[in-house]
Length: 333
Image (cartoon, rainbow, N blue to C red; front, side, top):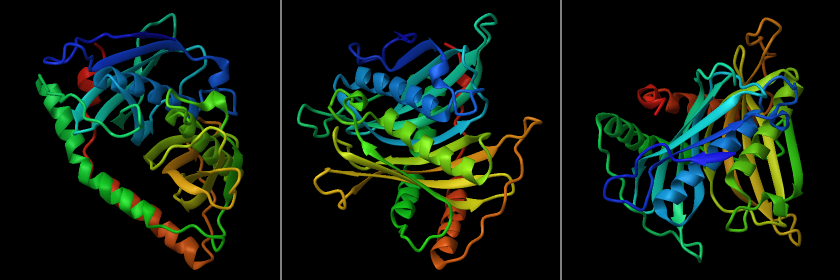
């Protein structure tokens, strides 16, 4: 993997670069269970790595992933494709950086890149003690910059509302809908520079558990088309127990909405795990004709089943008014 800055540094912050590109080839180890296309979890890892490099370059400090939102997987990526992941700062708070990431791919012989996905990530700069620290102010310098910043600012309040709604939900054994639970120890290979599990690794775990749930309900051709509201509340320490709990809570005519919650804690207190991450992913099952198949409707039996189904519908309503991110303005440098 090569990392090559392709944009000038932000004016007034000559030591910092506000944009970066990662360029590499998708390899067989990146593919989904079907073996035909790259797994969404691998793409999420790429996104987090590029955004992390961009945020660290801007802040000149270590950073932690706080949020990943609105990941739309618009086109499958095949192993052997050449991949470019572009990351750029589009807004800064006092200690936070909002990073827009776009993923583009091409056949290695064609070199004509097409967009595959995009999303926004929020990182918080931290000092050596892990405490939030201030970051340089990013200032827009073009109409495109200003449009992207306005879009990022417009998402601040809706994001808080979505987070509040998601955190308010309770998941108990009263639910009867399909569920997949993975439990394992966070390994040293999962660590970031701060000694905790890397955000991209956590997102891969989330995708794997969600895929297992979607595949059990439909088929192994299930693929993620959306992942959103990925909120990181606390770090996962290496050596701690990790529990990834994915639950199917709503079905549309062709879609499966899966809520995923990650908890972790010391192996000495395995029954006292704390919520670290949560999100909602949407999967579809691809048929032989290349289009999404209809899925079996979810049967809602208990009050919890019905409440979580309404929760999924509420999240769709909250996200519907958000303006589309104008990524086409800057797809290629």
